Picture 1 (cartoon, one colour):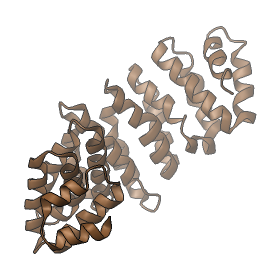
Picture 2 (picture 1 turned 45 degrees about the vertical axis):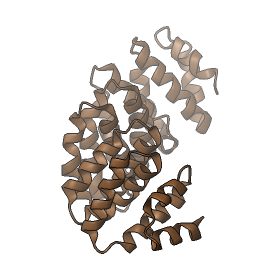
Picture 3 (picture 1 turned 180 degrees about the vertical axis):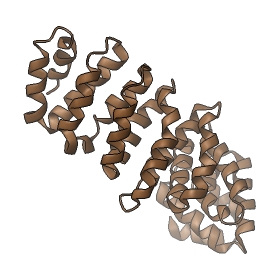
Length: 281
């Protein structure tokens, strides 16, 4: 496959290249994108070619565009991000995911400028664009960059109350629990404590579900401080999230969570949460 990609690029048979990449793996698409970038005369040409791929609106051409945006970003950041935003709102979910991942790559490599650019995305009318912010923030989290903890947590804070289900799934259990709690456990836990005092169900769902991710096992006893409080919330959205977090945490730390749940069985206010969680441990 890669020999064919090389031949088509060398012969400048771009339409044939797009056709050849239909249904190709991400690695092959990225290989082709890198080859096109190397063959281009300059980064301005790369950006123009990326725009052309986006206009074609074919799955393969859009995937190529997603992979070529970072090279165009170096020439014109605003233009490249404009293209990336359009790709992040594509009708094809695979394109949306590829664009969001590219956004994360750029965020990780160019943190401060990307932080400023992504803030307005949080208010975009499209949930796909707002979701891209969540995925990008998760990718930008790095344990060797502790200074990023606070800016990332603040970036995500307004999205905690977002009602879109796809954003919630990517925010609480993934971005907060899977990424930020892993790389910045102290700062993230402090924010989770603060957010646990908010009375919005969507916010509390995200807080509870952050403890359903594997990194929560390292702070299981501290997690129970928050989950114990949220377990008293009678709103189904909240207590079901607590139950989910408890059984997932319980599978990783049964010696800590199971005794807690057994105590909850004796509490009329928490019995439903405990019963639901114990079904899965």
